[in-house]
Length: 439
Image 1 (tube, rainbow, N blue to C red):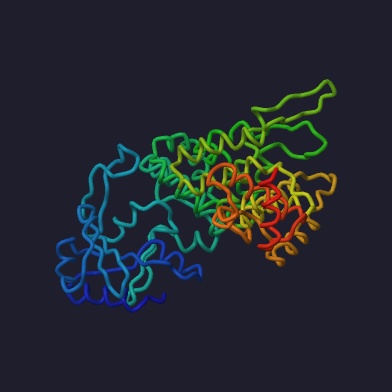
Image 2: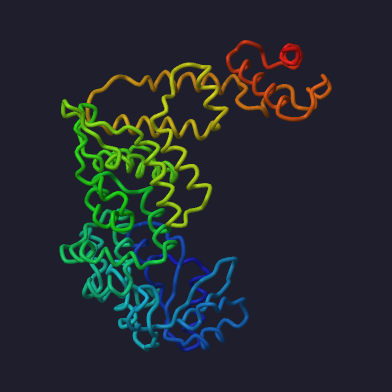
């Protein structure tokens, strides 16, 4: 296993001081999978104060010292070094009730969540793998260290982390582990919402449609607003699948952009609540886009998502049924209303939504819309007031008073430019403004 020089320096320094030290956890797992670890954690039998003395020449981060962790700042990176430890119960489902430092590496590894994360490495002695993590990686199995019910009760976030590891590394939870993931998923309601949101944001960009369906009991435990969608038949010739199966296909179809993944996940959350059936037995979902947007607003607010992400997701959902017609004038207005990036995302979501129906339906002319968008962008067209060749100061020189009338004039000029009635040129706009002023 390759170790960066700063990590190797830390291990050698501890060993020269008479202690043992190992790279541990995710960095070992990633290295065995042929991936480049994004950070390296070390564990040691040195007590925190002993670790601090070994590295007294370096800046130290001591905020985790009571739990055994000293951060050593080296080459601009923080390398966390944690004393071998064991832990008590988790009454708050997040922090151990107590931490006790131990002298043995295996006892330290035994407190970790999954076997694939319970391995260590030392350049001199090689890998330490007391729970079969390497074999589980090779066999593509996700298994807890010890009893899964105990591991998941200690910290229920491990359930969601387990789903993420399964998705990211292509692992299949062994039967007992998966059974307890489902059985104990209700305990995640005690978790800090920020932790849940962070895990979901790591999971969503990578998850596939089959994985979303397999792990629906876990996902709907943290987003209960999606539970009614599971198995909800749509009773319409426009859809071959139930709402959640369709949703899963749309999530996979929008690419890896986080806002699009969230929008796809929640875009039809309002369908069960807006469902009606006509006398012919056909289902209808009037107003479901708006209702889904309201649900998304509530979900992301509860999970304490950043405002910018929440607003973008809600906008995409509320407009996922807004047609992007192959008409330059309409597209220019959409670009002016929402901006280039948002319109492109609206189109991506609509394409995935259409593809996820599972039936042949009327052609939404997406290819024509894409071609026209490319033309419009190549023309450097006028999309918003800031793109107009004149501004408020120009209108004041024409005798306009600052206020609503001047704003209305600029908006009218923008509309005429977008409709190709006048060119976006200063002289033409000033002449048009004079006519509007006369009216």
